[in-house]
Amino acid sequence: MKLIASVLVCMFVAGCGADDRTNTPVPTPRPVEKTFLGLEIGAPSSLPECARYPDAPAPYLPAVMQPVTPCSMPQERVFDIHGVELKREYDYPWKIVIYFHPEQVPVGLEKQADAIIQAGKLAEVKVQQSVSSTPEDRETFMPLLKKRYGPIAGSTFDQGAYWHQPNMDVIYFRGIASDRSVIIGRSPAYREWLQRTHYLLNCVAGSQPPA
Image (tube, rainbow, N blue to C red; front, side, top):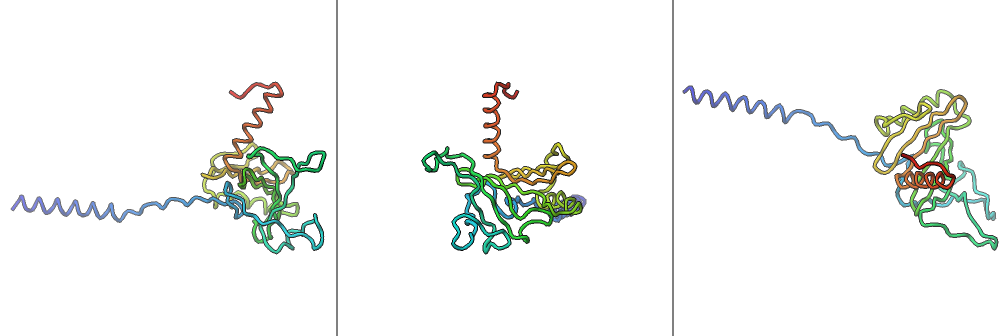
């Protein structure tokens, strides 16, 4: 009888332990946010060209009049003396401008952003604080970024912050005094290109390579 009772007690205790372990909530991993202003950084660029004024070869309609957004327009073209567009290296970063409708960007940010296309992919998007924004708008940027990208990975020199995602770095420059804040989404490939280019320029200028 003692043996049976001991076995029953052990089974009861083991069963309780198993139930406790089963009922313990498992933390849900935070989903990875791959987009910046609704655009996937590092992905092939499929932005449509912004609409132009009728019968005008160059001027583009302002952002609020664009029928489809986000849309892009080239900011950089390089021609030789004969008017032929020069070809660059495959990974040469081309500058574009992206237009957004007001509801597509947080309050306090400009409705257009500077961007980089590199090797056919959206390598960087950089948006500034709007000139018409208020100090209260500026104070909302950090909470919004934390909510979307999670805990910060580190701080910038001006009390801003940065985050590391698998497909991009998100960098928030708060700005000093009257400087406007800047928020950037940048791909690792473009970051490496910038670091490599900066190193080569320093070498050409005669500076010492980084330790």
